[in-house]
Length: 138
Image 1 (cartoon, rainbow, N blue to C red):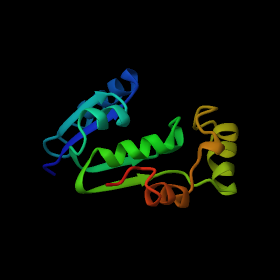
Image 2 (cartoon, rainbow, N blue to C red):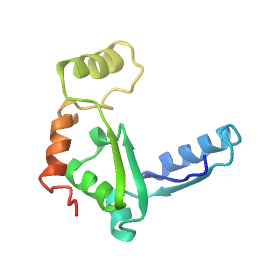
Image 3 (spheres, rainbow, N blue to C red):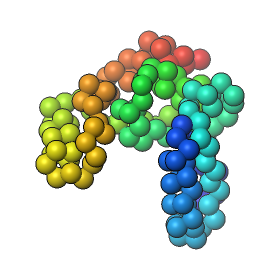
């Protein structure tokens, strides 16, 4: 679609997986302007603050050690007026039942220990971090 996209992950191994996937789908979506970088959003935000028009954090925040720092890095990476899109698993009984009990323990479609229910974050908690300035919105 003409966008330049940078995929990041602190894991070199996962960046390698992303690069291989990009090669598999090459041509399926037109010309891909896709880069990968083995780094964290916090490090990227320090090195290149205000670089991106949009930041998409899809199903990531429930896996990071420090959600506040992660969200702050996402915001700091945005150009003024940029857009931040965060999707995550809400911390509810249903999410525990489906993603941990069923998917990890019963059906084994997700490796055991992939999710910790205590790390699931509610939309209100994300909203509060952004509103209270914990995410350092300028």
